[in-house]
Length: 296
Image 1 (tube, rainbow, N blue to C red):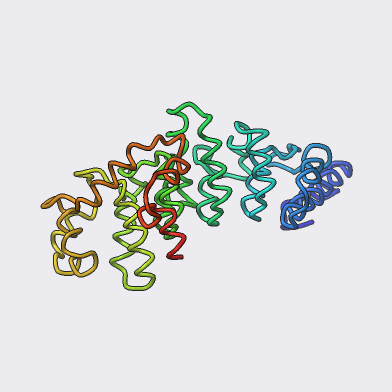
Image 2: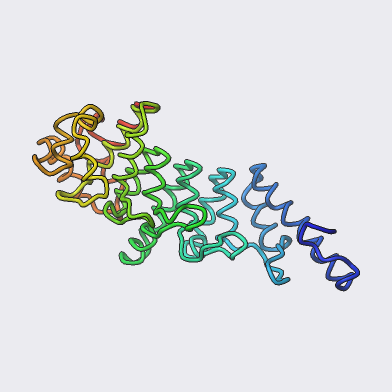
């Protein structure tokens, strides 16, 4: 068929043409099955025994657990995501083929969980990462996304850009890096400050996300917009308040409450987050995840 990437029977063997056509059909059937929330056993039977997809260069492949997890993320099929992460922890979080992710150095599952706000699956992914070596886990969580699609942002940058407050807390609690820049040199703090600078739309949510970030903000963190804060003192004091303004430009320390909460949060091991946070003998209004849920 012209113009859609299929080869015609006249330019390749009829068998090849039929094979490619069948791959397209079964591939779409698998996508539909995940979208329609069919039972896990049905989806796994399809993935392992029946479904193939056509890759670049004419290669025919079965869906990997990684590629199936991407479909589960798109359609929020939580039981299937749990199954894939429990049965294939390494393979489910491995890089999919180039047909599914053009950038082979990104963390597409984390990025997609944040983009689609799939909180339960995000929790599952982060829980699965607990079984990875510490260095591997940190590298995975802090990978920059595809330059073309995500602008070189890490999952934490993306969570800030999309104002996903609970995603921010979950990522930070599992060791996401606050000082790593994206491809433009902006930290996650810069991303939120830029959003605040643009106007009052979603102001409450922007400030909530900023509060989540501040619970993990180390002293003296360098960020790109610091000079702008100094130059536009009146504007920024009006946006974020005098105390926070002075803290960010380095002329005063954070409040005693913030320092106390930071100390508590730093004491929680990433491989037990958020369970360790929720188990703390603190009132709910001092627990970030509980507080976010009540405000939403």
